[in-house]
Image (cartoon, rainbow, N blue to C red):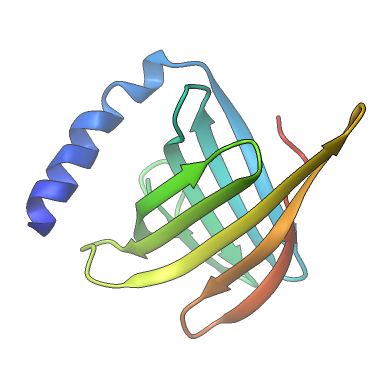
Length: 130
């Protein structure tokens, strides 16, 4: 089952470069979660890089160095963003990103919490979208 999920993820990733992409960074004290996302009707994460202190984890270590991780699942709508990160073998959930979005007039903000197994829980600001 895990191999089937991994294979499906690899096949899906082959289509990502053709999509318009943008970057979302969620950062807090000593932590950052950088996502390269496709602008589609559903959440499409092309790459994720997590930095905690001087340690790095990456879904694409050949491009962005770090310990191999995988995006386990994700969801986004106009109110929230939820992403789980697993180890490279998709054996265990290592990290969880939970973001709430709000807007009023021309102001838009997003922020929440990020947890990583064995490293702690962090408050993150995700308002900067590039």
